[in-house]
Image (tube, rainbow, N blue to C red; front, side):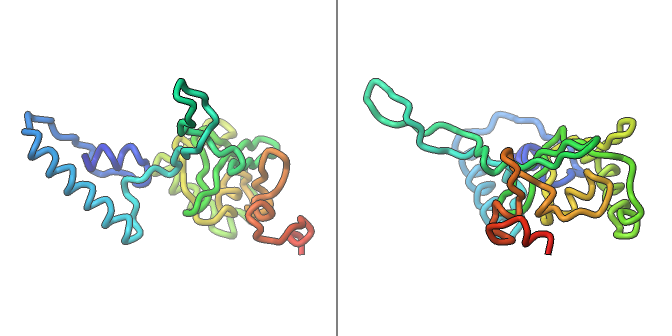
Length: 196
């Protein structure tokens, strides 16, 4: 259960990929094992290590779906308002801002070409570490995310895509062009305060 759950969540790189066989387990023992696993999950999450929680959770919202009994059924829905984009020449990043930080989606891509400021600020080595871990791969002039990746800072995620120093609160914008900083009310209601 633990290895399968951790692999599914994609929060950490697993050193042990061995998944044991599933011998016949009596239902009572299986229920006890599941209870121990759930307790372990709660304890880890409480201690700040949500090992088994996916980076992006499908939200359940009430949708006016008419049923024969005239009730509303909960329907899983993607929260489009939380989706942000980092776009420039050779860059197409897509992410969602969560309570833990910014999650850049697999398939987002940026430039391999980098600026002097990118090298000076240490971004190059950190991005290289992500390539070594398999979270990013290089294809020609692009660096591509192979899996959803969580960042505590939106600026580092924007820098890795753009290949230069960047203010992620300004570079990430929603579908109508409002910056992440403005959408999260980080800089107040206006974009001018970002430039100050």
